[in-house]
Every structure is written in structure tokens, then in C-alpha cells.
Amino acid sequence: MRVRSDDRFRMDVRALERAIADDLARGVRPMAVVATVGATSTASIDPVSAIAAVCRAHDTWLHVDAAYGGALAMLPERREVMEGVELADSVVVNGHKWLFIPLDFSALYTRRPEVLRSVFSLTPEYLRGDANANGGSVDYMDYGIQLGRRFRALKAWMAMRAFGREGMERRIREHCRLACVFAEWVGREPYYSIAAPVTMAVVCFRMEPPGLDAAQCDALNEGIVEAVNAGGDAYLTHTTLRGRRAMRIGVGNVLTTERHLLRAWGRIIDEGARLSRN
Image 1: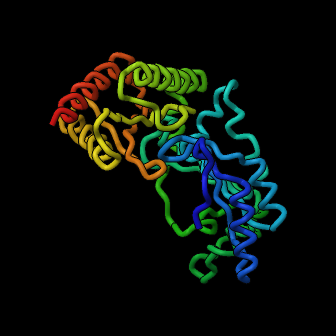
Image 2: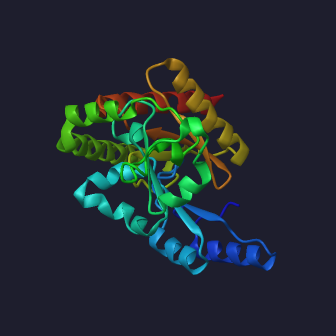
Image 3: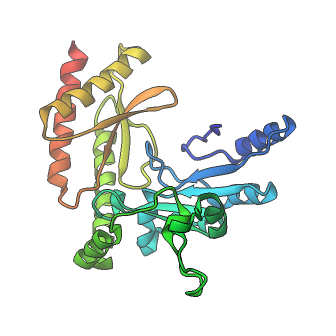
């Protein structure tokens, strides 16, 4: 079930409470709640502490999807984005999203590993190890669907070795700065507006020229994205926020500079002007 979000695209805790109450009234017990730190479309940050309190009251598993936003907590000045995550039953962070590790690399943390083991563990003779003999060593095949895995830790070690913590922090901080700069450009341009608060390195925005209705504006914004992407020198995505189409740009490449964003912004302005005249 989806839970309504507030005006900043964060989970509405009261709506969550009502949804759980409705389920219980129907004789259905909610199994889990998923909160997000860095939502895919908007990079919004759910109020995890308040959500955790609701989950504790109903003995419901709380999973925190910090796949994108978890990396931001590396910055001392932005550690608040993970506030309350320590109360969760599990949390995931994807290093390939904002820690400059090649695809694919995800880290799952849980305070209840025995639950994962009870679900995924296999015990046929040919898979039985000597965990008990070796003091309870961890065999990762018992904690997920996969039995065999690639050596993903190697590329994480290489990225961390190459950049160092300071280098990673510097790049993440610069990406956030670039997103704020881009948002300032959007705010100064007539007929353009920011569609969601800029919390990380993602900017959602819209073009709404006068004389076009909602459907025409949606088509225009989609058209701008398609036209810019067809040019090959910048790449945008679109999303739907409150039922309206919005353009979306994310800064995540270690080589991206303000010059690249300025060029992309120029392409957006040109395509927007061209398409709005048609």
C-alpha cells in the first residue's frame, strides 16, 4: 500500500497511522513499512524517527531505503539525513549510486539477521558448512536468495582507496552545490519553476508557459526531455509529481562541472522555447 506524502514529498506519518489502523480494522496485520532517505524521484527524506515510533507501537518491521541518500551522511554537516535510521530493522545503501562504485554494489544492514537466516537458509547435505565448528562464522548464502556472489567488495575497496573518505566527501559536497546552482538558474528563468525541494543532488523542475493547459504543459515537459536527450550532450529524466510531469536532472558523475550543467541548461532553454512556439 502506498502512503500519502506531505507537501515536501515525505511520508505523512498521520496517513501511515491511519493506513495501519484501517488494515487492522479489516483483520490484516501490516508486515513492514519502508521509509526512504533520498527518494528516487525527488531525493526527499522521510521522517524516519516518527515512522519508527509508529512501527514499534505495532511491532512492524521498518526498512529504510537509503540507497541514494545514505551516502550524504558521509558529510559531517549532513549526517542528520540518517536521523532515526538506527531504530530501523534494516537499511540498504547502494554504493553504485553516489559512492562512485561501479554497478552493482549494495550494502544491507539489519539488526535482526536471524530473521533473514530463517527465511533464506538452505540445509541440504551438499550445502552444509562447518559454521558451528568455527564459532558461528557467517555464510552469506544464508542471508539472501543468491548462493554464489561476485567479488563486489573488491571494487568498493578500489573506489575507497582511490578517492579516500576526504575525496568522496569533497565530490558529494560539490554535487550538492551544483544542484543548488542549477536550481537558482531555474528560479531566475521566466516560466520555469522548481517542482520539489532540493535536498541532495537532484533537481525537479517544470516549464509552464502561459496559454497552455495542464495536459499541454505535461506534454511540453516530456518533449523537452526527449529533445535534449536526442542531442546526446546531456541527459535528463522526467517524473510525475502530484499528477504533473516534471523534468529531472541529477548530478553524480565525478567529472561533472558547472560548465557541463550550464551547457545542459542552455539546451533546455532552447528546446523549451522551440517547442512552446509549436
